[in-house]
Amino acid sequence: MAIADTAPDATAAPDEPAILEAHGVTKHFPVKRKGRELLTRSARTVHAVDDVSLELHRGRVTALVGESGSGKSTVARLLAQLYPLTAGEIRYAGEPSRAGRGRRFRAWCSKVQLIFQDPFASLNPVHTIRYHLTRALRIHGRAGRDRAELEQNLHALLTQVQLTPPERYIDAFPHELSGGQRQRVAIARALAADPAVLLADEPVSMLDVSIRLGVLNLLADLRERLRLAVLYITHDIASARYFADTTLVMYAGRMVEGGDSETVTQQPAHPYTRLLIASAPDPDRVIADGTEQQAPPGEPPSLITPPAGCRFHPRCPSAMERCRTTVPPRFDLPEDGHWAACWLYDGTESGAEGQA
Image (cartoon, rainbow, N blue to C red):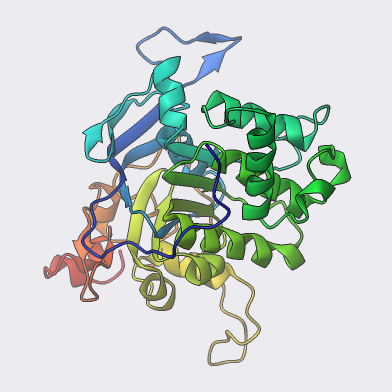
């Protein structure tokens, strides 16, 4: 079976069902001491992800944005089924999925592939690019009937990620390539499974600024030509506006805002989203007296003992009394598909009360 170098352009229909869904996904990690779990009633857990729901559609990019430690990478590993769920459900094409291990896990990997953040660590330095791609093709039954077809498929993978001519790269070792070229090889290895979903965990954060745009353009091209559903994990909300159709914002393990990328980045509703945007360097962003706007003080909370209520309330300039006690649900905003999990938008009199 030969791998095609190109595919017809196609994007997701607006009403097309989600290919991958997460409903109420939760992951808690037990705190360990000296390699053993604390088997007591007071045993502590890290609340890495709590009640996260999202949908990925073919031909579309969904960005998951948040600062380090917010739980973004844990969500990706849950969707890749590298971690078991504490609670919640993952659905593929509408069907509940628990990959487990062995053949079921391999079948899951043929549909959902994870691209890791660090291309320096995700490739084995003692093996050539030919070895990495050949192994992926053989694992997923796409190596071809003979050596000639295998060679054709290897060249097609490198061509798909714009490493041309393929002969220049196929027998190289990872250390002979640049960071951007290594990340393209990692993307090619993911494509060897012919997946429907790509989970890109900060795929450009380890690369030089000058080549990040090229890798994002490559992923956008693959999304369109192969109708991939892409989850783009990043701490850079500006790149989410450029690259993603939909943006979801996470803070301390919970979703706090979501919607169309242009709306979320240009009309942020949640105070935390505003903080993210304000933290991006911008020489033109000044207040009336000519000084640069300052972000609210404080640090993200401990996920072992997260705050009650809204987890952002200790840093929020608009925090109210009930923000300290009750987790806010998602409130729909006037813009179509835009929502925020913030008591400021509940529409009641108390929601409009002043700062506590």
